[in-house]
Length: 102
Image (cartoon, rainbow, N blue to C red; front, side):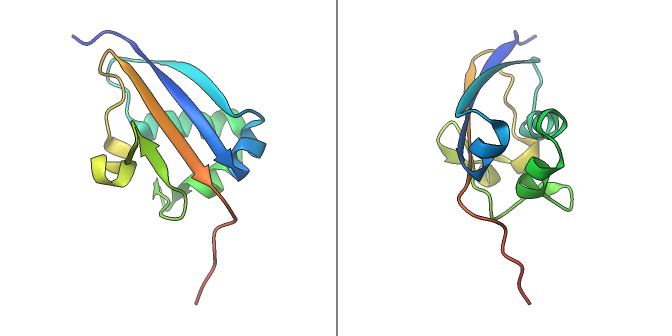
């Protein structure tokens, strides 16, 4: 069984303003996923952050999320494992509002 781990979250751009901080460290359960972390952040910081991070229940394409320096989409998206008994690093970058198009 994996031991609990921690995750350093770095907020860049608009997300930093919403969170009111540049960085924070959270304790994670041994089986934590990126999706669980983002849902926790949405509950903590409100619907505005959810609007930037999630689209139809999936990781939004316009908000780069990096997991240990690599694009989270390429690591399983919301199903990417964080709680492996070590330190994970998540960077959430939102440089502007989501674009609506047609």
